[in-house]
Image (tube, rainbow over all chains, first blue to last red; front, side, top):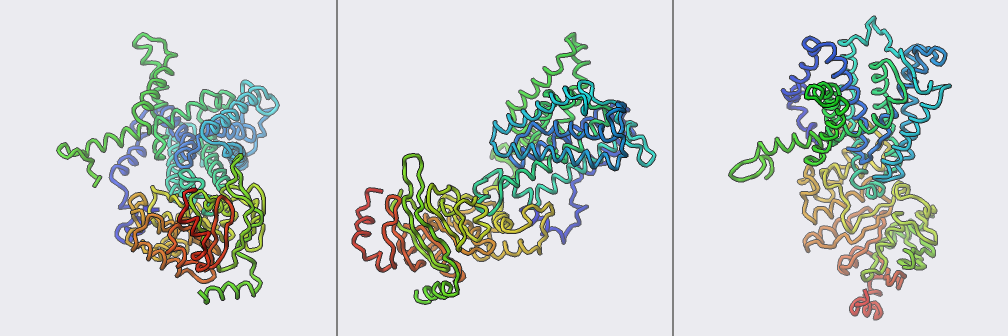
Length: 351
Length: 263
């Protein structure tokens, strides 16, 4: 709200375009011209995958950072959206997939996954802290085992393959450059929406509930309803990520939303930082780079390639140990240290 | 004082139900009876002071009325409606407000944002995803409240940077958001300087006449200047009702207050 009032104050003086710092312009242009410089593998496997995991982790960041609710069900919601797009749309498993056109399958998948995430939230908001983590983990495990054992709808262990994005506007969206722009578009849109909503009444109220639920109730807010609504919003974001993830690998199976990936989303969010929506994207890129290249690096120095999880684990430990707010926290710390006056030993902005 | 009483009389005469009616309300924490057999009637527009030593149950009384703790037994009616089983937000939406003895403010937000949250709680826009505009009705009512409690110069400051007295004023502004009908003030004058106290008295006596309240106050001077009737509490029970003059001159009350080491 302070931001709103200040922005409104400045509105007469500068248009919003002028207020975007130069660093953002450079980053924006770099992201736009990336397909000109980067190879197909980098575009599809590093950036594409990174943006998708970033969107799913962003949905956790929204709940945890603004709402104080650590939900482990976000990857499962993404997985459910992936399953729905495979079941309603087209896949290689023709005896199950209904083969409906994309304009029916995509909204249906988004709606069902959002409903699923909202129901999970409806259960989880009645608990606090560690119990929220436990109940969401329980839902995630249940989904994993259910999809693995159910062959009628979810095709059991093997899931669905051949789940491809529609050839909209005559573009094959799984071509690396096209897929890069597709995921970039949704990542930027999700990021911008979360930034905007965090300063809307809904987002402010959510932060108020995080800081002091009792007071918010005494101001006329239905704390439970508001938390459930936050889960619904986060589930919608996760569902978008889930559909993109399914298109990226062209398949969905129980392992997509298994316990490992569920924990990975938490790790990504913590590594990146939960205080700002950019954190999940930073965390996702670090995770994807490590997961992709750590194997080769380990083999090169004579270690077994399967140890890449060890690297991620050590990185996770180091970040949690030295910065409670992930890479973002380290960045803030470094910036403040740089501004410090060596004679007065004070940060530049503190009075 | 006569003018105030006649407002309560006139409101009652038009058939307006009592602002607050508590019948046989008690609150137990395990074996400890924090409140026992509370019968309390406050008429619309009436301004009541609740006195009592520490541990007399005054704040527990507020917590039962506000819904923070459900009453163990008894019924609570708010303007005729039975609100005994209602969660706090349902009572607040019916026009009840309260302030807290220990300020429960959002210290990471600005003064204006705190009041905006209080205003938005009463409106449909609490689920809005759209950022408010400067000329939005809620923004305007938040601005008015900032003015009312003299915090205009501090409106963009973070609450954590406010003085203690300013934080108390902010508490009051938040309780006045969105057309309250009845307010519970929990020791609003505690820790205020004499100048801030007279400011507070001016704010309380300047409230619209139909807006009744209960004020818990240790400072007899503040309590007796803003209230037209007084309830004494002792050990979780109602000890005495009366006009300020009656209570002040009552020998039993004096014994409790002056010899009150049984707190």
